[in-house]
Length: 318
Image: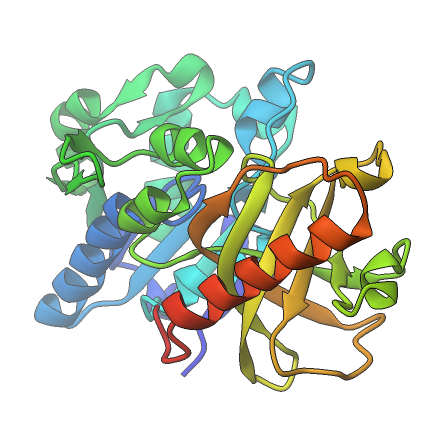
């Protein structure tokens, strides 16, 4: 059953009060978020009370630091779908405003968490903050929560082992760094699923078609992986999954100036213009290269396609 979707916590239905609440930005909905949310869901089931997730759109940093460009790991739609996969009874996506962020930690607890939602248990991670200036911390929540009838459960930070065998604490910052450096296999470890970008297929230069490799040029509003060629999959609007050799970059062989995301879908020859597809990045193949002409480029693309065909699994990798 889909959750009740709200944008204003003051509209929270009385019948779903006295439940579990988890709050966060959930950029990427990574393994740490997943552990926290699955714990919240399990606690709600164990206590036979409702489970609510609260998040914000856009990220508060966009309001607090407007001069700093922060490109999200997920689209709003992807994040909503991922959060819904934890089966909350209510999903609150608050439109982030300066006025909302100016609310004090005390007012947030009194008026929103206790007053509007009536939460009796908050399940959070150790870095959770709330209220103006991030004055509300998990330590403060533990101390002051009981006065509002709120119990607190803190889920420890999750750790994963990367391909270089280093053990790291999962965070959105780390995941972003890995994506930006093309380390998509390691980002997969942090996300527990392939990094996926969703966007509309738009008209490009159509050079791929002229050399026998027509690509889907995808309009993207998410964080781009490092320039290069990747092996992955594409999911079509009808749910079909196809292997895909994905190019992120400016196409230097043809003196390109604009960074694009282009996916060559293996064993596929249909028109996708205007449709929304999702492209998953499974592994890095090579850096973006400038070739002397179309001939060497074609030969290299053949190798890229062969590597994609041999290394990508079509079974659902999520």
